[in-house]
Structures are given as C-alpha cells and as structure tokens.
Image 1 (cartoon, rainbow, N blue to C red):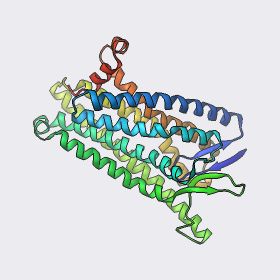
Image 2: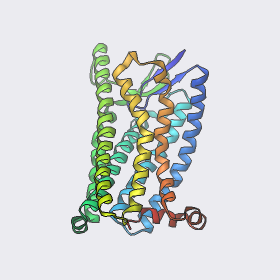
Image 3: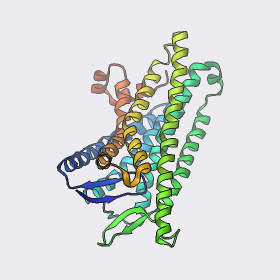
Image 4: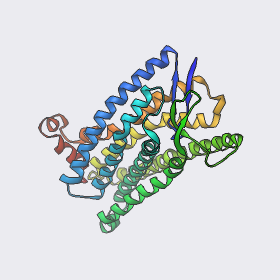
Length: 323
C-alpha cells in the first residue's frame, strides 16, 4: 500500500511504501548511502590532493581532478539527502539549501558524463592522430574545455534551480519540490505545466546526460580498438584501462536510474508500482558511482596490494599518469 509519493523536481524521486520489501530496500539504501558518503569524501578528497597538488598538471590529471571535484561536491551534500530520506522525504533545511543541494545533483551528473566524454575524445585523438595531439594537446586548452564543461552543466541545471523551492503540504510538512505557483496562477495550468516540464526534463536528461555521451564514448572506443589492433599500440594501455573502468562504472551505475526515470516520465500515472519501488535502489546505485572512481584509480596501479600498503598516494599518481 502506498503511504506517500513525493516527486522532487531534480528527477531523483524518493518513494516510500509500507510493504516489507520496500522497507528493507529503504534500510539498505540508507546504509549504502552512508557508506558512499564516507568513501566518497575520503577517496575524492585524496584524488583532488594527489592530482591537484602532488602531480604535474597534464590534460589527463586536470580532467580527472575536476571529475573528483564534482563527485566530492556531490558527496558533501549527501548527508542532506540521507536525513531527508530518513525523515520520509521531508525537507528540514530551508529554501536556499533546497535549491542548492538538489542542483548539485544535476551539476554532478552533467559534469561527470561530459568529462568522461572529454577524456574519451582526448584518448581517441591521441591514438588516431598522435602527431596532431602532440602539437595541439595542451594544458591550457584542457583547462578551457573543462571550464566550458562546468559552464554548460550550470546552464543545463538552471531550469531545475529556478523551479525548485520548498512546499508545504496540507499537514504542514515541508518538502523540496517543483512549484509553478509563481509562474502560472491557475491551478489547472500549474498541473499541466508541471507535467510538461517534468516529462521534457526527464527525456532531455536521458538524451543529453546519458544516451548521447555514452554513444559517443562507444564510437571513440570502436575507433581506438580498430587502430590499436592494426598498429599493436601498447603505450596507451594504462590510460585506456582507467578510462574503460570509469566509463563502464558510470554506465552500470547510472543506466538503471536513467531508464526508470525515463519510463516514469513517459508513463506518468500508468507507471507500475514495481517500477516505483525500484527508484530508491536505482538512485542509490547511481550515487554510489561518485565514490567508485578513486577506488578504480588505485586498482589500475601496478602491483596494487604492495602499492596500497606502502603508499596509497603513489598508486593514485601512477593510475592517473599519462604514460
């Protein structure tokens, strides 16, 4: 039996049911999110320190450092989401944090997938056109492209930021949700605009923040694989391993959530209850991606166990090094 159904405008629907199975999934989600917060803050903080302050700045380290910065920012806001989840979706932190915290979720999604796409493009150019890359692939250009990624992500997040606000229900409980009251006066028009905006937003997120970048990355991999097989190139093995693990983990973690959101936005009232119950586990898996990358960097280092025992920083530095 459905107890409460809240649809925050950030696309990360939080659903609460009274069934035993949904309660178990809810408890598991809270535990996993708490672990994700600890691992994400420590891991991404270490990557920012190593890539930003202990390594020579290269195109690769700049991209991975900004990826870690994006994930670290998201992890820093995770306690707000966990507390809201424990409180049954209620929002206790006011109007500004409602806008800010939930906007960080979207910024992280956009920045992460665009940076992974940028890294894949960079690797592809290095493999296909090594001479051109050596002459034109500069740190200055990389910084400009990364800044462009952040600006583009902010622009894509702006609509969510504008419509997000705190809303009280009939019982006086506060929620962080979309509110079109200031934009459309008629309640019927508000409902119509809400349906149009959330549907369009969900579909656009799936296209811009997932399917198009993943398709482009797949094309880059196909081109690189063909060139490597023909030329037997071995100098790009480690960077490609790191990129492969990062891109694969992003796809595996985000695909279930993106698919559920897309189907939910298309079906609306006809959405099966089973799909609703899967929202929390899927969103938890997507969030877990933000703490995975530092672990993957370390595992890509040579002689992982020995390196981890002697120096975690050296393992990260080796994983992020271009050559």
